[in-house]
Image 1: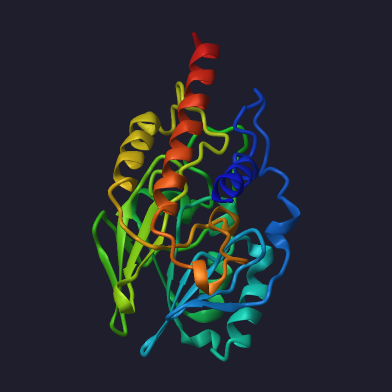
Image 2 (image 1 turned 60 degrees about the horizontal axis):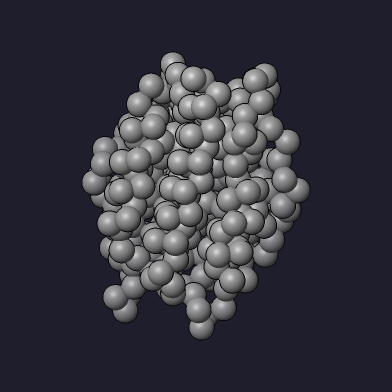
Length: 280
């Protein structure tokens, strides 16, 4: 089941990885990216407050809330409604984190920051993109969103702490320059991993002038991801880990992250060979 799920989700996420020559604006969004879904407790202090196709994760602590991703700007009202439906106040959100600086995950950060008063922490490699509202790589679509001010620029291995909860920022660039995997120890010996995206997503792998190290970064990130241990896998696209339908019985899946990584690596190498053949 996991193999079928990963294949379908990766296909939806590639956003035209077999890139046309013309550059377009933000690509049409799949319908489920803006389809509201009821919030729910995933496990422990982690809640789902996103849409059917784009994840937004809420982490509760005694000192306030941490929100990972605000998805698209159009989704912010639904995410805010989900936070309230869980019994929290928007002012309880103290820290905003981002998986990576693409329009579908970072587009709502400016509005969410304004509405909550939270501080935004992001990997240094994505600060320019976030603060300029532009994708920082050569792609087959321009990629733009509302700019947002970053309050704290993070480096690989930095910890974000609130109310006894610690999330470690692991640099896994390639998808963007500052793509970030978040790792959070939980009660009972479990470890939640919010993996950075590893798909090509329309990026130019050969001759990328805005991001010349993209191929080396991707390959280093695949290797890095293979070393990360965790059993609660919560990606930015929930379909990759069946987040919305996985039952408590199979919520913890230590073999899922290696599977996601291996499949993404295979897809990357196929796309790199395709683009290399065209360029030669």
